[in-house]
Amino acid sequence: MNSSYLLGDSTTSEISPLALNLEQATGLIVERAKQLVIRLIEDRGHDKPPFLPAEYAHLKDIQIVKADLDETSAVLLRFQDGYVIKVNQNHNLARQNFSCAHEIGHSLLRELKIELNTENIEYRTFNPQAPGRAIAKARERLCDAAATELLMPEFVFRKYLAGFGVSVHSIERLANIFKVSIRTTAIRIAEVSTEPCLALLWLLRAGTKSKALQLAWCLGPGRNSRGKANYMPVHTLAKHTSTLYKAYQDDGPVKSSKLFKIDSATKRLPMESKGFGHGETRYVISLAFPDR
Ligand SMILES: [Zn+2]
Image 1 (cartoon, helix red, strand yellow):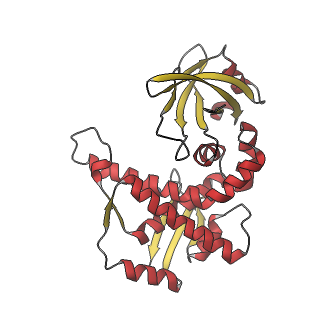
Image 2 (cartoon, rainbow, N blue to C red):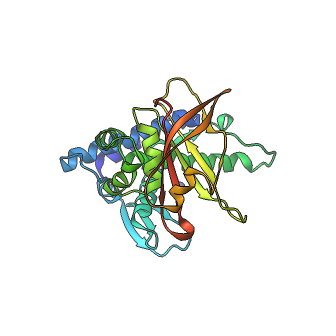
Image 3 (cartoon, rainbow, N blue to C red):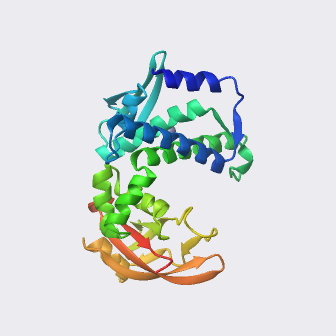
């Protein structure tokens, strides 16, 4: 364990934990992740991707061990002389990278001693365990935010995205360069793109005769948008006769347009879609562009 870690730990341990809402806590942990990115870039002398969990683990004296973990993605174990991350060796490398970075996120969370304020976390039940569960879920989201910054540092990712162009064509190339999954890459594009951009995931609707795609999620534009417009497609189902469905059937990218709700108004947005994966795990990612 290096001295700067010990120093950070001992100076913060006397301060009582801060009660923060999720937004403040996210800002804090992402800032901590950014500091670690800078340390890594200084240490290795360049800012070229990929940014692998093993490199961060080395900086923080964390050991990464591949293991058989059944359903679990990874676990963080704390010993007297430091942390050990056990990661599921049966998962693909992109997933292992995210799992490890997420566990490094947990170690950052412990250093920061963040205490979440329950008031701003939603739970709609009188179950006495619900607030605890909501906080546990929120902590996982914080670690995901840290993992995203560690693997795809904002300023580096934005540079590569600008080079390749904000398009579905770029998703696979960026995923290969940063060694992350297609889905996390699409989400990151929506998060950091300077041009407002939405990322959508479509999955095959299960259990019905007529084939159709069902919207699983729609994310962004995040902090780059002016105001807090909340875009959602008016129709969350794409029938087998639709242009969008062609992206599921064929490998090439498909251009279409879709009606989106923006607060109380609706607007037709141009959209690019592409299918990924095979068989039962096949899915479609779309990017939609509010300003085009
Ligand atoms: Zn976790």
